[in-house]
Length: 156
Length: 266
Image: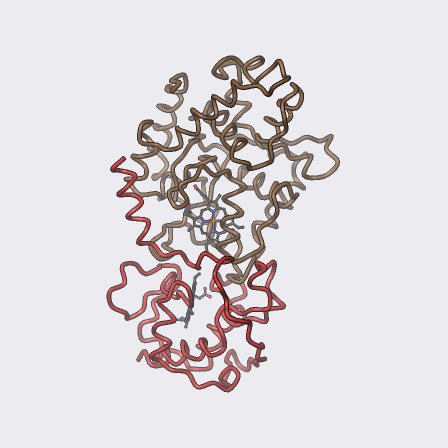
């Protein structure tokens, strides 16, 4: 059974794209803030929050939060595996504007309707068959989105 | 352990060796490729070794259930199908789920291998087992393993056109907070890494599989529900039209793949 052990060890290092769902205790859902798209950008920060790049860096690599690493390469040390589904986000702050990045994270389908990338702040009413624990919720909170945007903008 | 299935395993292996080649040649309309081509060499070795493959325990246990009868019943599966199921037709097993035109609702038109096992049980005075209950998945594992190496071949003709179209639509619908469709991962981004995990085509030819992640023998329908959980979606309920449509559609995508039950998968 050594093969079983080694295979299990390999797999244990693989965080899933989302947390186990259901069982975990979630904080109460926050009220949803409307946002507006103009010229493929959301210029206004969600709910008027000011993001923190430092917190954003944690959120992008937390497999229970943004888990952007599941699909993107990012300039973060000591990560055993980045996903290869999306493009690398190194230097994204010098390539893309803040408003465009915000729209990408909030609801990428305004840019690419067929995108595999989840909308992290889509209107909860648009989500098809959310698990009971997630009804009325967005993937990230407005504050988390602003933190992530601040972090990406800082990647020059 | 019963070794009547051995020759089948050999042919299965030969076919599997060719699979990576198909994969390299893949363009837009992908050839079906078994999940076997996407797992690690260690997992492959575990699947191939009947003594290391934990799924074989379910095969053994399934054979016991196959030979058992309920109190008051005079017949078990072996009464019709032989002590080790040797009278069962491997090709017929590889053709499940089957289509039954006489069914009124979709859930009656699609007959899964589990449904058929239950029909036999009830006909012979044994209890109906709940779909995807541990015992029924175990029985399914034994029966399906008899067809190891046989090519998966579900009906795809005109009669099932609407079943397939409905299944495909469900496959291409986004679910849950993660807001992705099955098609996104298992068709458009096959072979890519979702963090450390390589995404396969999500084929059904190894099911029921032994899952390393959960340590359990798992039916295809249960795996679909687990992917829906992953999407933070409300999974389609057991015995619903939707879960059966998805199962049928997935099996149709994989026609031609060798049955690998019990495969070992993430």
